Image 1 (tube, rainbow, N blue to C red):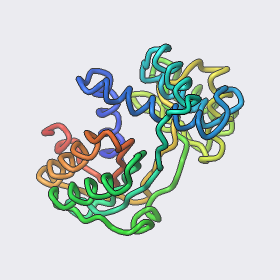
Image 2 (tube, rainbow, N blue to C red):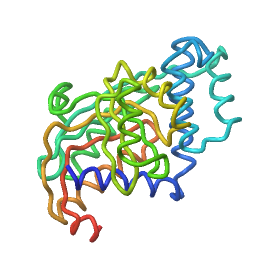
Image 3 (tube, helix red, strand yellow):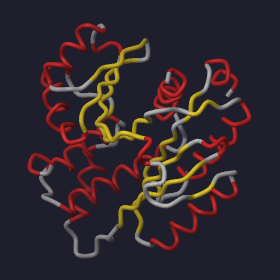
Image 4 (cartoon, helix red, strand yellow):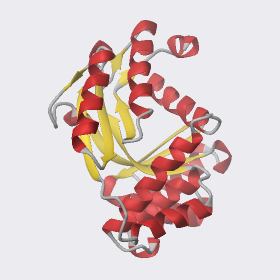
Length: 246
């Protein structure tokens, strides 16, 4: 999964410089509003909200934006969003999971279906590809947080399942239900993380050549450009040579 992991790191770095930063902020704020509306508006009493706020901070969302998103959840005119997961296959048979928050199910379903079709994929039924992924908590720390042994020891002590280290940084994995507890323990020893969120980790990957990657990136970019789409995950594999050409 080296190619897949490397692309994730490229995306992570690119996201910090991208002109679409305001769109990212908007999606993170939406998650905060939904989490606060579903539970307590106090992050200390609402694990989902705490994780949403932590992820927003890791992406440098301003404090006032976070506070506004929480306050918005308490207003009587706050929008009601449905959380929906779409699943399908992209170019080259790559499995794709699309997570959305929408106030109009019909609009979002139509957009997702059309995007898959136009980009050489096929939208499937719920559950058609999710079995090929594991739901995990993922915590990212920069390489400067410590060496591989030190971060691994801290991760194990905090109750994490695994730690993957490279020159790009450290990826700490947890059971999905343990993410809040593990991230809190790590924060006490390593400081605030760059990112803390639930992810879909592929059990197996599908390797793509340059043409396949270009088609897949068009699908992912088009989906992520939609305001209703929170995140897109795909189980692709690509060589370093192909990634460099991209």
